Each structure stands twice: as C-alpha cells, then as structure tokens.
Image (tube, helix red, strand yellow):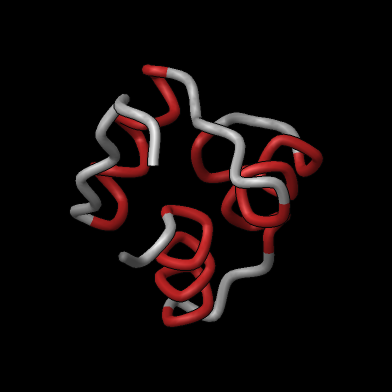
Length: 64
C-alpha cells in the first residue's frame, strides 16, 4: 500500500513544486510539509481539505 507521504511527494513533484511552494499554497509552514513527507505525520483536517482541493487526493483520517 502506498503511504500518504509517498503519494504527497509524488503529486507535489509532478507539479514541479518545492515543499515550500506546497506549504505556501495551503497555508502551512515548511516544517509541517517536511513532517508529512519524512515522518508520515497526518495533516490536519483543514490541510487535508486543501490537499484534496489541490491534488484531488483522498486523505483519509484513518491511520495507515
């Protein structure tokens, strides 16, 4: 099963965005995006909504 962090990184890179670009786009800090992609931390409800808007990504709140 593909991890959220891997999916997020792939989608971000397809847009040719840096982590900083993504952070700015959805209104979170760079360190927050880094945690999502490196540690697999779960985005907040608001961030999940924004990720879904940007990428059409289904970011389920259940643990992976």
